[in-house]
Length: 162
Image 1 (spheres, rainbow, N blue to C red):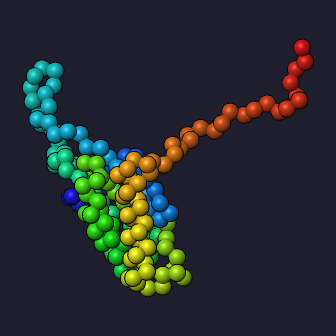
Image 2: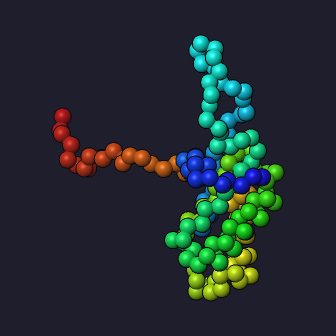
Image 3: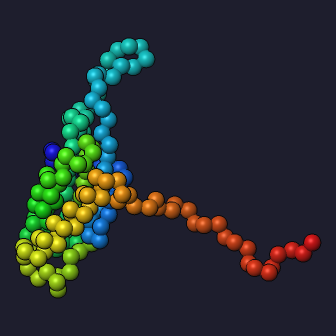
């Protein structure tokens, strides 16, 4: 499993779909196109394409741990290490795609006062295991977001009489 490195790679995956969520993490996935030879235009001449974001069709992983949700650098780094370690274990079960694991809420500092405590590491690892297992099984797909408001219903008893 390769790691995402550039901002463009992360942005491309974040524009993909969220395939699994837990209380603290979300997993974004971008399906990778199959590797193909040089593209040709209508005249048959080969185009010079920009280098692809993802060089091959292997699995890719990235960790996004914002300072907003983990204030201390030692906590952010510990969570990132856990993300990469757990994803390496689950590499075979995940689809060959680009993935980003994003921290979406904070771990309670009252429950985990030390940034590198064993209880915090166990809690992060357990939640990441759950996140990646759901994504591999396909059962962790979140419900689709509603983009429009539901239609207004007329008030009861105020309709026209025949």
